[in-house]
Each structure stands twice: as structure tokens, then as C-alpha cells.
Length: 180
Image (cartoon, rainbow, N blue to C red; front, side, top):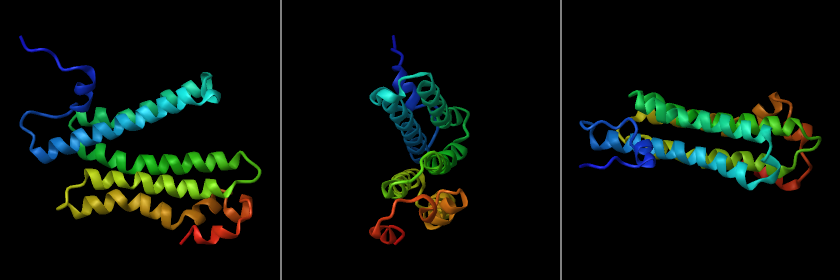
């Protein structure tokens, strides 16, 4: 009698078919892993930060888990390209939006918030390198485009949102090097 794989293994392999090529399997499994890591990070933040342990924090954590578990469902429905595109575009866009919303709520924004946004964007920029096949140049360009545009035009986006460094940033002589 063959035993059923555990729940975690079924999640990781969700969308993998027996006749899939090795490259396709790898992409599906990696995208599912990345989605699970993003979900776990949100659960972890809810658990470790005492200020999050309320209904508002719980609802934000559940919404985040819902948002980041969508690629697993897309893979399950054999929408693998859409799943990867979602993982390439949604994290940098959500992080940028979330950081700008947080900056709007404070009077003076510390320089670490401006730097932190860029660090988060660089961190999420590794996802396309894990999920793009080397021969597919157009998918690679599509995968890095949102991150690249947000990084290059970060100050302009922040100013357009009303939270630019000149508007709300705490003065720091070293900030000029951040954009470089």
C-alpha cells in the first residue's frame, strides 16, 4: 500500500504533472516554495511582533497569506507562466505600496525607510533569477522590469505619492549616495 505524501509535499508539488519536463517541474516547485516562504514570513511577523497580535494584525496576516498563496493555486490550475509572473511582479509592487502607505502615516520619515525600501526591492529581485529559463530572454525582461523601474524611479514614485525625501525625509547628508 502506497502512503500519501504529507501536506507540505503536496503543496510544494502542486501543479506538477507526471509528464512535465525537468525544467518545468523545477520552475513549478521553486515557485511554490517561494510562495510558501512569503506566506511563512507573514505568519512569522504576526507571531513575533507583539503589536501585531490583534484582529487588525491577524486580518493583515491572513490577507497576505491569501495573496502569496495564489501562485500555488495558479500552478495547480496549470497556469504556470501566470504564477511566475505573479511572483515576479506582486512582491515588489506590494512592498513599495506598503512602505509608501507607512511613510504617509508618520510626520518625518527616517532615512532607513528609504534605504529599506530599496533593500527589499533588491531582495525580491532574486526571484526572477530562480524561475526564468536561461533561453527565454523576453520572460526575463518581463520578470525584472517592475523591480528595475521601481528602483530606477524610486525617488520620483515617492515624490508622486507625497512621501519623497525632500518632503518628509529626516535630513541625512549620506542620503545622496543612496540613489547611486
